[in-house]
Image (cartoon, rainbow, N blue to C red; front, side, top):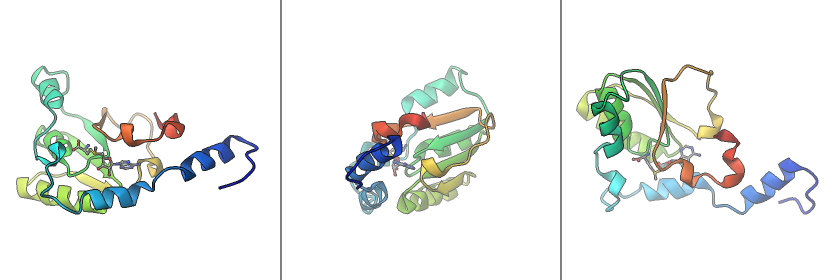
Length: 144
Ligand SMILES: C[S@@+](CC[C@H](N)C(=O)[O-])C[C@H]1O[C@@H](n2cnc3c(N)ncnc32)[C@H](O)[C@@H]1O
C-alpha cells in the first residue's frame, strides 16, 4: 500500500489492499459441495423462471456474471439461449461443467475475474447476476 495518496488510482489501490483476496475466498467456499448453501441446490432462481414463464425473457445471447455452480446458466441454456457464464473460482466452474454435462446442455463456462472480460458492446441480449455484484467492493463500481 502506498503511504501517500496523490491521485484516484492510489486511492483505489489503497482501498483494494484493505479487502480480502476474492479468489482464495471462493475456492475455499466451494471446497465442500455438501454444505447447506441455498444456491448449491441445482435449481434456477424463481424470478428467472418467472421471467421466462411471463415471456419477459426469451431466447437470446446471455452473459452470466459470477455463475457459481451454474444453476442459472444451465437453465438459460435449457431455454434455448446461447450462454457465456463467468466465475473466478475454478472449483465452481468445474462443478458447473459437470452439471451441464449431466443435463447434456451447452454452456460456455469461463473461469476468470469479471473485471478481465473484454466485452463487445451490444453482443448480449441479457447480462444476468445473482449474488456476484454484492460481493464487489464499492470502489470497483465503475464496472456497473
Ligand atoms: C453468492 S455466489 C452466487 C453464485 C451463482 N450466481 C448462483 O446464484 O448460484 C457469488 C459468485 O460470484 C463469484 N464472484 C465473485 N466475485 C467475482 C469476480 N470479481 N469475478 C468473477 N466471479 C466472481 C464467486 O466466485 C461466486 O461463485
